[in-house]
Length: 141
Length: 145
Image 1 (cartoon, each protein chain N blue to C red):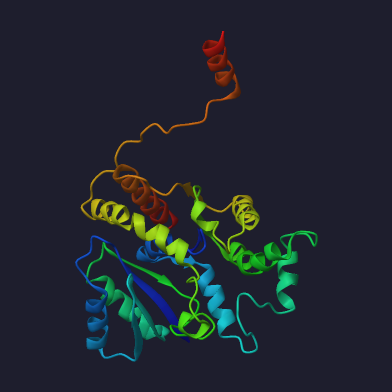
Image 2 (cartoon, rainbow over the protein chains, first blue to last red):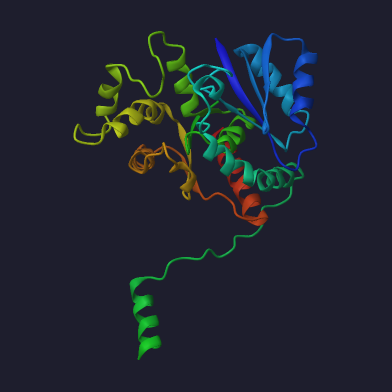
């Protein structure tokens, strides 16, 4: 069965999408590779893709993130080249998560080094009705 | 290997962290892939088969907007299949032009009522929170073994 995956690099990574594409070409498997600004999209048979994913991840384990994709690259039902441009479906989610990838990478590095998790910090919570009543009375009385 | 549903169901970070620990992440893209490989659908998941609203009716009543039922036809089977779940609470990013807040609420509700191991957390905003975020997910996933 065919499988398609996104390989996304964190902003902190020294690995470029072109490096990943070259690595995949070197492996010599029958995989389609599409370079993008955030990483690469790879498409091929499931066994080949799963084996390739492990080798690509090994290039920079804490800065490379991988997820499944529903459509093959260049699928005319999704490809903007065929649809005359427009918003890229799924862009907002990827944009949002790409922004916090450097933080996640630091978290993964900390886990890999066996550091203890930082102590819990007090979270800001909304005041209850009673607390609000006290605050209003203090402010306006 | 445990099937872990991630919410948001398109989350790259959660899916990646789950698969790093050897578990299977249940994501909506895998469901879409099944539809893509089904002949006769012009533009999945926007097009539906007559079977899809029936699947959606299991989770939402007939007077609920059809978009919710259509989305639930993809998400519902994943929720039933899940053996554990990781849910992000501050999920503002899921409400884009094609998002659906009611489906998101229903998904979170159904995951809570499944009584499976469930981890709820927020997307990190700084380094401390990120370390806690990754640590909690690792601890949760290792506990599933």
